[in-house]
Amino acid sequence: MTQTLEALRALEEGVLEDIREGDVGAVLGWGFQPWSGGPFGWVDMIGTERAINICENLTEKFGPRFIAPKLLYNLERLGEGFYIKM
Image (cartoon, rainbow, N blue to C red; front, side, top):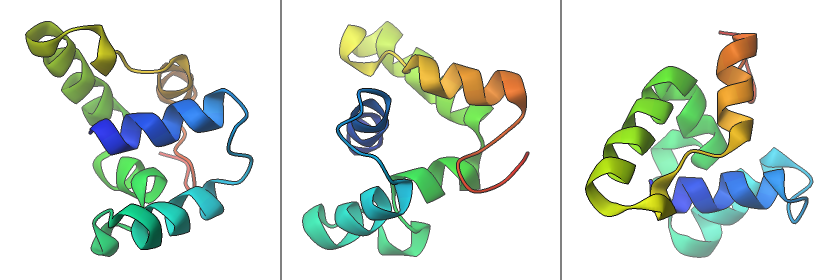
């Protein structure tokens, strides 16, 4: 989840402009789970609601570094993912 959160924050902060580049970079650059398609593809696989729940549980156990970015809450509210509509 740490890697996923960093990718989400990079997108939210404008450091990353294209989620496809983020997914490819994560898989090839730091070895993110290749079967997932990358952090953005993985969030779509598990769903934004589950991703938020994971973040909330980790935040409770380990502190604020695991707080879900607002981008994730916005996608959940809209019923959207990064590549798909939920």
